[in-house]
Length: 114
Image 1 (cartoon, helix red, strand yellow):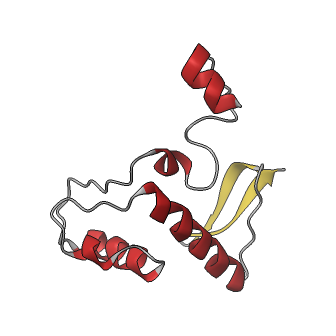
Image 2 (cartoon, rainbow, N blue to C red; image 1 turned 90 degrees about the vertical axis):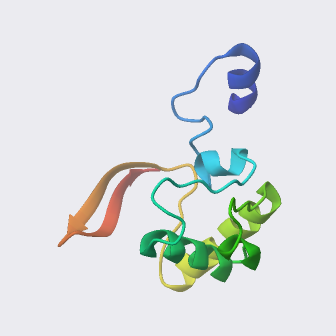
């Protein structure tokens, strides 16, 4: 509803727009993966391998311009959510994060408004 208002009437809801929801803006894209820090750098390779672990096509590891496709993004997010829950994480849809609780450079939790 709010996305339709944004597209058709250019009315933005600050609590519901393209950046919100599971996957944020990524689920509204066509799934192209773009980076300017080098495809084979350690951090980029780690992200690509993690995406494959959660169900991305293995071809993204070798393609010059990797592409997930929106259909794959939905499955990846579902698999990641299931894994987070299995590790004790909690997912609160409709909540807004107010603060990250960081200890020794690691996020230990969040303060959220549900």
